[in-house]
Length: 205
Image (cartoon, rainbow, N blue to C red; front, side, top):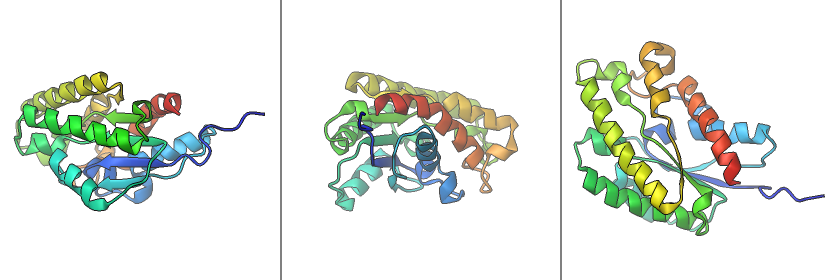
């Protein structure tokens, strides 16, 4: 009889509004839904510890991690960050430098095991009603550019990258995938992220 290698596996989710689940119940957060899906598949994983807040950029997330004093290590660590860098018009060069540093932070949380870290791409907030009077094509183009940087850095670091951006864009034709604030996504959209991430994460544990 073999021992389940992920018995009591703990999970840390790092990010911004999408990870904290702005405008949705805690149970609808994508990271919480992911943990639930993995448990249904027989993996004994906890609901995530979360270091995330609406509005955070890469630098603000980095500062908050330092201020948290969290010295734990985890069997699984996720990172989803960058939409506020794009929203505020910050440069790709700054994002690359700070994102790369956050990947190293995530690896440290994962007990120096890059294969226990995964990244979700930045979703496209331009499909939301909030963006109705903005240049949605420009938003999409910029988000794709930030995601290209993230994917490149993940590849260099040997970290799994889950592209949920095309999935986020399906919310343009389905209002039920948008949260009540008309900017963030609903639990229905987050469910799709969790389903897309689950097989990738399962291969990491």
